[in-house]
Image (cartoon, rainbow, N blue to C red; front, side, top):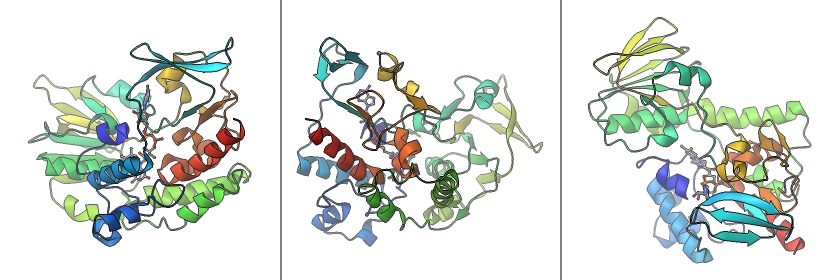
Amino acid sequence: MEFWRSNMPNGMFLRSACDWHLDPENVETIESYVAEVGQTPAGVEPLSLAFYHSYVEWFQMRKGIAPHQVYVERLDYQSSTGHFVATTTAKDNIEAKRVVIAPGFKYFPNIPDELRTKLPNGRYAHTCDYVDFSDAKGKRFLILGGRQSAFEWAALLLEAGASEVQLSHRHDSPSFEPSDWSWVNPTVEAIAENPGWFRNLSQSEKDDVDRRLWAEGRLKIEPWLESRLSTPRVKLWPRTQLMNCVERRNGELAIELSDGARLNVDKVILATGYKVNISNVPYLSAGNLIGPLETRNGFPVLKENFETSIPGLFITSMPATQDFGPFFGFTIAARVSAQLIGKALSQSI
Ligand SMILES: Cc1cc2nc3c(=O)[nH]c(=O)nc-3n(C[C@H](O)[C@H](O)[C@H](O)COP(=O)(O)OP(=O)(O)OC[C@H]3O[C@@H](n4cnc5c(N)ncnc54)[C@H](O)[C@@H]3O)c2cc1C
């Protein structure tokens, strides 16, 4: 849960609802937790980040999950023992016959080169690195991006006292309307019985699935943001791109957009999403596994049980989206990952 605590802002709401719980046994569900704390799903949705943390703490306690609080610095395969060795930052070694990696989003922020070169160092941040808005009061922001996180960061910045938030995106501005995720749960649950489902679709069928999830997630903005953004302090610049950014002597950033608009802001936020490149995972690139790890388009190539080309090494979460479908970028995929990887591990003992 570190990413949820350190790389998401207080006050954020989830897009997913109570049905996207974490328990493959369907016991410690969000609905059970909601009932236990005397609430109803309708009463707690949209789920706040704080509520989701409290659910996960309860889930962890009920399941008796006690993580080792360590960072792995490098992960290697030791041919002499046939074991993996994880070296922690405290220089301890953890040996294991099998390793499961669920790296989530943290190592994959997408910062396009064209923005990196145009923006002055230190004057921009990706959304995952800008979650403490205590310095936002009275400041003017430009957010590059036009999907849910762009609009949600805009709302939170305004609430933190930003004087102005402008959003520039290359596409039309999405509409505020509820997303329909009702088809996702049955689709993902069916993967437990048919793990090859996504990979065996034709490319155009895969594109249809990707497009359907993309349209729900990207063409719609949660309606609960609309009233929070209806203020003249917000300005949208649809169908524009950043052309130029000059840091003036007084510290102001003079921005030029592709439609000729000129804006003066104090900080630029990149709501430019995430893009998997498995070699960005530092403990993999530091060790001896990244060379032999078979990849395609930056994703690890996974078998139907999530095992990589390296026997005993399993990878899930966002890096599994290429072989298992786009749902694996979300918590909904944790249950089916646990079922399939759990089965593979128990069979290979
Ligand atoms: C802004 C935003 C909003 C989102 N909203 C939703 C939503 O509403 N619903 C939804 O289902 N999903 C949502 N997601 C997606 C969700 O965050 C991911 O699906 C989920 O976090 C993936 O879980 P994970 O456990 O694989 O990875 P993470 O939650 O990212 O966990 C990765 C773990 O790896 C650990 N780790 C990292 N480096 C090391 C190391 N060197 N050594 C040891 N451990 C390490 C971290 O400490 C962390 O515990 C959202 C994502 C973002 C960015």
